[in-house]
Amino acid sequence: MTKNWKYIALMATAFPATAAFAQSGDAGQKAVDLERYEEAKNYYKSQFGSKDADKAYFAIGDIYLKTEKPDSAAYFFNQALTNNKKSSIAHVGLGKLELQKGNEAAAENHFKNALKRGKKDSYVLTEIGEAYVTAPNASDATINKGVEYLKQAIERNKNNAEAQVVLGDAYLAMKKGGEAMTAYDRAIQIDDRNAKAYLKRGQLYTSSRNYNEAEEAYKKVIEVDPNYAPAYRDLGELYYFAGQYDRALSTFQKYVDMSENTPETRAKYASFLFLTKNYDQTLKEVEQVLQKDPTNTVMNRLRAYSYLELGQPEKALEAMNSYLQKVDKTKLIASDYEYYGKILGKNNQNKAAIDNLNKAISMDSSKVELYYDLANLYAKDKQFDKAIATYQEKQEKHGVANTDYFHIGNAHMMAEDYEKAAESYNKIIEANPTYAYAYIWRGRALYSQDPETEKGLAKPMYEEFIKLAGNETEKYKKELIEANTYLGYYYYLKGERDNAVKHYTTVKQLDPANAQAEAALNEINKTAKKR
Image 1: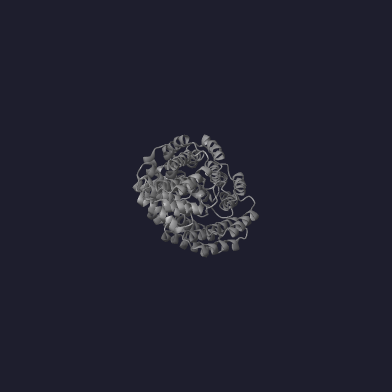
Image 2 (image 1 turned 90 degrees about the vertical axis):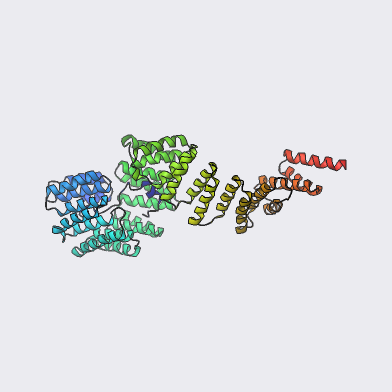
């Protein structure tokens, strides 16, 4: 799945990618692939009395490591070593743990110990390779170390489909899509019923926006194994991005039904409900999970987000403050600062709102709408120069749009810098000379420079607007009243009675109860009678 998906952003690092937890083909590995982690743990616990007990301890430790419980992971990795002091796989586990902490030198020492007896063991080599590939913030150099171990694993065992799958993940992480697909295809050649390899192909097609092929790959997973829950998850996400929300939700529901009923799975479902704008249902799901797991990061996050989307900013602020008190600050994501900023803004705490939106942009500058939200807050706080600078920053990073000039013009209007406002609106006219509203906006800016209408600066703008509005009186009724009122007054001042009457009469036709036009026409008539 592409990392740009909003679903992934919401979940952050809450859920692991399926990896090589144990010897391919055993019941524990099958449970892991299906994301049935408690079932997998129970299976491996049943193996503690076997000759491969160290591998069972390792497998449980790896599950805990991937589900972000490093202390539990360390316990089981050490138990593997206690059970078998010569265990290669135990040292792999401890090395993985060090890599997760960022201690690469310590990890390499463990891997060296593992290779003293396991250098010919394809499984051990695969696990070391996977450790490097999945290390947090792994560089290409780190991933390439993993690739070398994976290649050695494949040399030792040509039928190691798991190594091919992880090798594909490595290439994908380095943006080598063609090589990644080749590795997944080789895994399928080894085992044509390898559901995980088909799933990975689907994810690769999805990331390259080849949605038809992605759908076929996910359907192939389901054909191979109708109970393979992750396929329904990814297929549901695919339908979501295709805008097929009902189909997306029903497919994702199948994933939830098949998956283990854990807070993590429910959090995924709640996130999906949120993305499909089912905010009421999101809250129901959230509250159910929080009763059992009150510190669940994703659920506390979604509760605050959902209250804001439901138009309940006070409850959103209460929920957000509660979330921020509980969460590890290193786990905060850009959307947390985004929503906190929006929530604070809705609660009229502008300064704090501005600080949080700036933080959100610094973490993720790809969201164009955040620049508009931030600029609006600056303008609301009368920091018009910063509002304008924010729009300009948006233009530098995301290109120029007519809406930018509209907003910049409005900021200049609020700052009473009418000349610059007129210049901004004129840029819209230059880009789109038939866009009627732009003439109204520029007309207002010019009128503000000539409030007594002595020079008639706004006259050409209002005249052009009337031409462009044509006969669409309902669409432009309010603006046509404004334009004709201005022109009526302009001609009245110039003593051009007939033109003044024409425009004021048009105002009366558009708005029979218009008191200003009524008074103007009466005044013109009185003047005419006196003459």
